[in-house]
Image (cartoon, rainbow over all chains, first blue to last red):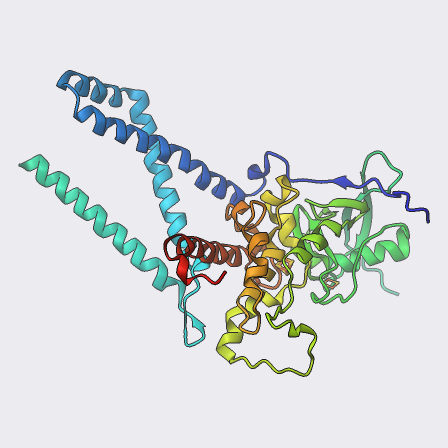
Length: 136
Length: 252
Ligand code: SF4
Ligand code: FES
């Protein structure tokens, strides 16, 4: 042997369409893609807050923009993504957090349930507040 | 004399030899046996049809970790993949993806070996007593339980073949090696956390993982490398903020 390279190895990858290969990949892909929509939504809300301090006409123009059909579709898609992200994220928590009591890992449900519970409470409070503001 | 007609299963096996330009798929007809796994079929092909077929195996019982391959597109231990699960066929057998192919189903493990070594998967003692075989380091059952799951890895590399990040980043240290790093970091006998720190926290370490989680889904030993990596991220983040906000609590 003279140290010459005898093989021509070929690298086989999953390719850029990896997320189409299995349902589980697709779900992860959607979970990660959801971040883009959530980020855009955050920007829209920040602009809304900024516009609230501007003259009323500006504010109204922005509201009209948010109500155009394209924006409404965007928000419907965004909320679906936000729900998917939240749901999958909460369910992943038991893998991420390993809390042990007397050497045993606590059941995953104990980590997942409080998050869904907290989510429900916060959502309830926001709905109640919006309703209260609307009524008052 | 038996007159029963044998059921045959078609195998499409990935073939590649070092002096070929292109890999091809070769088709073999293999008799179906209820108790056969894909590895039995490969052995049948090699023994009776085509002696040139090349693949790795050793224990035939899910322990050595050498027989991994893609079976119908999923990473599997061929010694644990029953033909009955793939009826009526055809069954496509390919080398694990995300690795270079040396020949047929045999992949090049050099890159993985380097990554594995880089996380120093052995007990490190600050007093340098690693070689001192006379010392005794006691551990309670619950301390052992903290890392036990991550120590079950057989280096079969199915997790790398399931990982899209490994597919696109040759440098990513990857699931099994990072799980082993976590295994030693969690071991109360080990004092090497600081020594592994840079490798685990660098860009190609835990932070490159986007928690696809498929590594844990395919792992035949239920190691849960995805869990190990997320737990390491959690520890890493806490450690970062501790260094930032309470530097006096960190040993230099
Ligand atoms: S973590 Fe599991 S899939 Fe990955 S090499 Fe170890 S045993 Fe195989
Ligand atoms: S031959 Fe050893 S794990 Fe399959």
